[in-house]
Length: 180
Image (cartoon, rainbow, N blue to C red; front, side, top):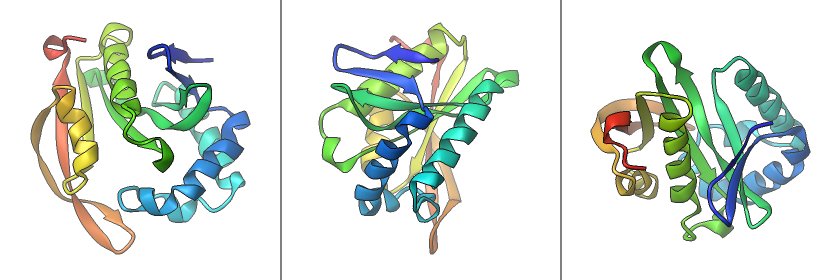
């Protein structure tokens, strides 16, 4: 079981079937908040859908393809952060994250993403970490910018969000640039 302590308030743990009800509740109550930027909300309509996501996440982790963790803040799961995918040939990983609307503004995501970035460079020995966010998602982009990621460009119409395409801002951090 993967557990990574971020600080005295937060730790990250590999998503587990025991988390399915809580994760679905967070998803459901934050549906409108999350739907603006995440394409999978319409496919998550029951606890069973969340169980399927957890099964797929754990299978992908076992195959060293990704690492999806529950964010635990003050002993409560409040969101998800992790590596959506690893490219081991090029020693890179792509971080994604979401947070229940009731826990925004507490620095939870920036601390979690910072810890994941540090873990990537110190433990996984990656050379590059990437964060992609919709160009208009200023809050998500601010996470990358506050952590010192460089904006490397924009991918036009990179993602279909329900009824329209959105451009992605692409941020990168190299191991030699990271000061932890």
